[in-house]
Image 1 (spheres, one colour):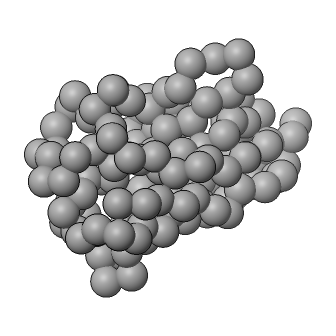
Image 2 (image 1 turned 180 degrees about the vertical axis):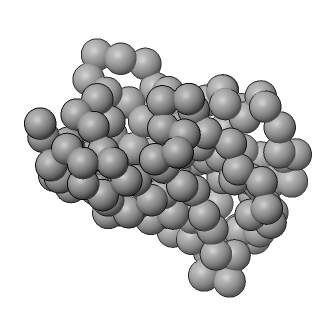
Length: 127
């Protein structure tokens, strides 16, 4: 499956952005989908994950209550709605998918569980 993220940009603290990730080349509903981010000089970190059907989501503590992951399996897209943005949310954001039919579970917080990655989209939050 090929993934392409979009929607990044520059926003003031307290603002909102919505990232999208379009998938092609696979049966999208067969994949759990995750979002990660990487700030300059830091390791890639987990943001959120959504199950294949969209009924289950899990978030990093740093974004819980502010970010929401959703998906539309009819349109082969997964989205990350980011509200109440903070300067520390500044990073390149990546969508990712583990192997097909991978079960949803807590280990999906690890980037090592993912086989497919989008190219990343830059989010910059100014103070």
